Image (cartoon, rainbow, N blue to C red):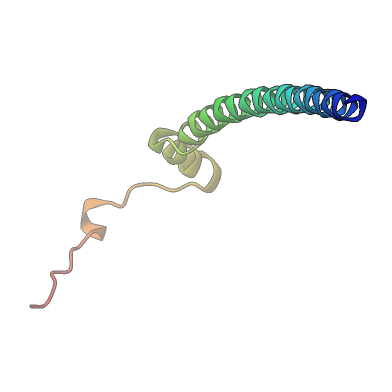
Length: 88
């Protein structure tokens, strides 16, 4: 009888330790999940900022201004333009 009781106590203690270990692991994983979600949010904010910056740098008016100022590009005179029609 004492052996059965000791065995049952050992099983209960092992089960309790298993529950404690699994709860600790669950809390640890939840903490890691929250940390990664915060990191993902930060990366989304950075992505949005980079897209805004890219659209600013690639704006047509900015490109045209730089082409005029830095390399002296000008629109062609009306006599310099011609069009080529596609062959069917």
